[in-house]
Image 1 (spheres, rainbow, N blue to C red):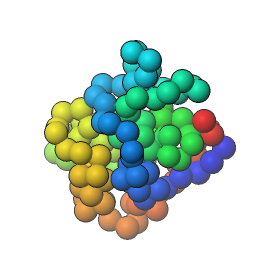
Image 2: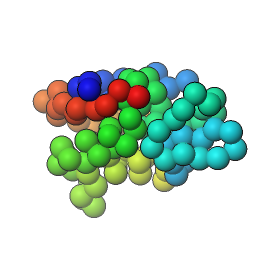
Image 3: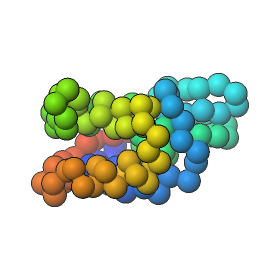
Length: 120
């Protein structure tokens, strides 16, 4: 088990390094995978998928943990995990821009919130 903060996740999104992928956490070997990656070569990943790779934790636990924090960003009451997925899937923002936007929209107290995750 590892505990990561919201700030850790934002920084891990910023570090990306793979092409941005829409709709699932990972894309590799011609198929998408939702939650976990294996030793196969990952070709692309969404914001949370790339954060999970950089943090060496399970992407679905990042997403669920962010939603469980009950941090709501916009008037549509999207929990934080859903909000990050929305920024990834429904906008043309780069992963750097997603990280910058989260950094500017969340205060320092929220960024210290912790999420327990299994190591990948």
